[in-house]
Amino acid sequence: MWREIALAGAAAAVWMAWAVRGKSSKVFGPSIWRGPRSSRAIALTFDDGPSEATPALLDLLAELEVKATFFLCGAAVRRLPEVAREIACRGHEIGNHSDSHAIFALRSPGFIRREIVRAQNSIIEATGQRPVLFRAPFGVRWFGLERALKELELTGVMWTAMGGDWRLPPDAVARRLLARASNGAIFCLHDGRQLRPYPDISCTLDAVRLIVPELKRRGYELETVSRLLRAPAKG
Image (cartoon, rainbow, N blue to C red; front, side, top):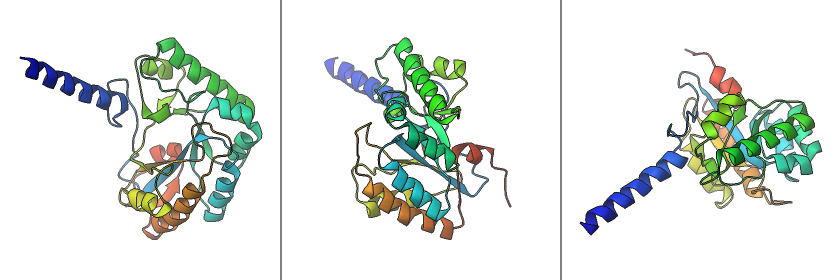
């Protein structure tokens, strides 16, 4: 009997882990993790910014002629409003990534809503741009998130592939993402490191230098998430 109970408990834990963080899980509401497969386009997204390192990434994206989607944290926006404004001025899309980058698991619906609202207000004040997309910190969703997003008219976005640029060398990040390249893919990278000031994102920059030219060589267009989701069928 105890063995069966233990197995049932383990199965429940696995299910909950998938429900909370699985990119295709709809247990805590719908969430987009890729665009239409009919369009040969991919979206690059960057989380946890803005940071002091973000301008270097913006310069690189301009050099590569790429527009991306930046999921910003409200606390970082208040610390570096000029960098947040620069992201918007460069023509990139801005999404909401919560205020303090706290994990939502086991948090109250009120806490989750306040995190989203405070970040939303800070982003609007700094950039004049109202985010329509939201990505949960660490990709962790919880009770109350679906209702908050619906009330605030935000669409939840996960990712097709995570680069792991905070722990892997650039060539490994590039290989990991390029192996998952497909029509409508959404790639997740980082221009910040969980709100730490002056983060080292050299790995991210080097990985982007490898990824973007190869994607273009394969015939992919690089789009923002919103443009990717609206992309018409081709061919």
